Image 1: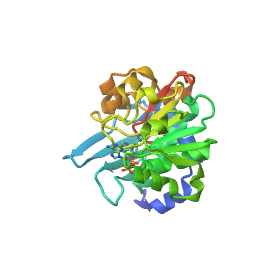
Image 2: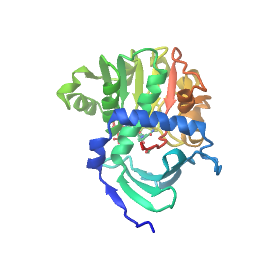
Image 3: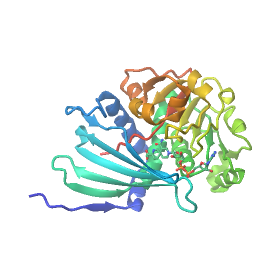
Length: 304
Ligand SMILES: NC(=O)C1=CN([C@@H]2O[C@H](COP(=O)(O)OP(=O)(O)OC[C@H]3O[C@@H](n4cnc5c(N)ncnc54)[C@H](O)[C@@H]3O)[C@@H](O)[C@H]2O)C=CC1
Ligand SMILES: O=C(O)C1=NCCCC1
């Protein structure tokens, strides 16, 4: 009889092994598997079963998201539980734990601190989308927002692309200046006084704010640029000008998730061209010369 032995894997341990290289490869593969499968449709034969997460609102303070997934190929039966409390002060706005079960027996195997995985996986997903959708090698990156995701996106993009400049904007300008000064390695970073200044010559834009209303306007975007929309993960929230959503070619991580959760898509009534996993699988085209948006909502896949 299998003995129950539940291992706890700490944030320190995860942080020491989970490189962006590893994650980018794993997320790319995961997104491909997801789009190949009948994910979320409850089919017993599905190779990946990942229903759209269940979200519990905690009055006006925040929410709890429950994100289960079964990946047959990896014998993975996992769920992430993530909270988002945007008004938190002096502690992160997101917290998460991940529970891993044995896929053949249902026996719980491990409990993982989910914070670093959430932080880095999200940036890795934006890197995957950018690898496929950027028009040539991106040289100027604009990051709107200066929180945890801004840090991870800066690290992941700096490791992957040869960036000449990273333009940083925050709605409280002091925070953008602090971001730039945080490390001597950030010599290629500049704090911008306006979001327009950050965005207007950028090859790639990342929006990583807790804003419920658009922080980027259509007319600021360089034609052919690629934008990763990472925040605004509820149907009543939007980070991107509806005019940009309508004029750009829109890619998502999960079509079903986007049609339930993304205010940027629902409020603008933008058409979804493809899941990024379909591009990975070669069943949809990467329209690199067009202005593209990847609307990220956070489909979770763990490396083997
Ligand atoms: N798509 C995905 O997979 C994931 C998305 N997210 C989302 O990404 C966003 C950023 O997450 P974190 O960096 O962890 O959050 P954070 O709390 O560390 O940072 C939030 C940033 O938004 C800025 N901000 C707050 N209110 C604003 C407003 N009204 N207008 C403009 N900026 C404002 C803050 O100054 C800060 O720079 C959140 O919306 C979060 O829910 C987070 C994890 C995964
Ligand atoms: O995938 C995640 O993790 C999250 N996605 C949307 C916002 C909360 C965290």
